[in-house]
Length: 260
Image (tube, rainbow, N blue to C red; front, side, top):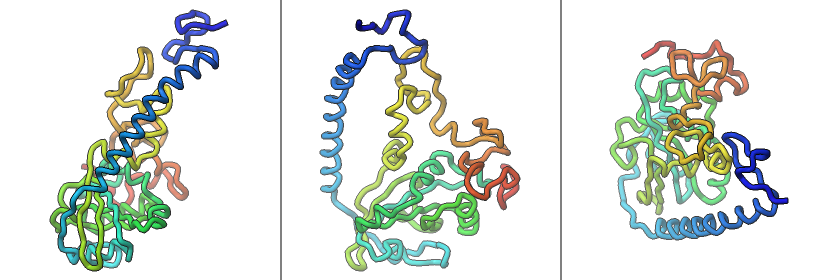
C-alpha cells in the first residue's frame, strides 16, 4: 500500500515524508526536469562568460611571495591561464581572526592539479603584509602559492573576496572575469553537497520545510573551540585546525598570540 506524507505512522517531525520507492521515484523525476533546465542554463552562462571582452594591464607589477617581490606574470608559471582567489585580510589579527568565508573558500582550493592539467595555474592573493601571510599559510597548512598584493592596484590588488581569471599572451596579461559573493560558491564543493541533503547548509536564508533545523549565518560552523563548539572568540580557530596532523589545542593562537 502507498503511504501518504501525512500518515501519522510514517511522518517524522522535521524530516521528509516517508513514501514507497515508486512514489519517491516519480517525485525525483519531476525535480530532475528542473535540474536539467538549470544545468543547460548554467552551460549557456558559461558560454556567455567565454565571450566576455578582456582588459589588458601591466603584467610586470610586483607582488610579494616566499621568494620576495616577483612580477605578476610569474604567477602563470608558464601557463596561459591563471585563476586567483583574493583572500580578505585583517592586519594584526590572530590566525583564527581572519575572514571565515575566505578561510572556507581557500580550504577548498588546496589542490590545483586538475587546473594545472588543463593549462591553468592557481594562486591566492591577499592584502596582508607578507610576514603575517607567511605565518598564516604555515599555520593553515596550505600548499598552494600565496602572494601579498598590498601595494598593487586592481585588477591585481583592489577589492578582496573575489575569484578572478586572467589570460596571458606571451608577456601581455589580460583580465577576463571576476566574481564575488555567492559567485565564489563554485569552488566550495561542500556547499554543493550540502544543497543535496535534506537539512541543507544550515544557513538562515534557506527556504526549508517547517520543523527542519534552524539556520545561522554563513560559515557559522567554521570556527570552534577546543571542544568542537561553534563559537567566535579568543580561543576559537578554523575548525580544521583542531584535527589536521600536528595541530594541538595549545597552538590555538599561533605566532600572533594577541587578541583584537
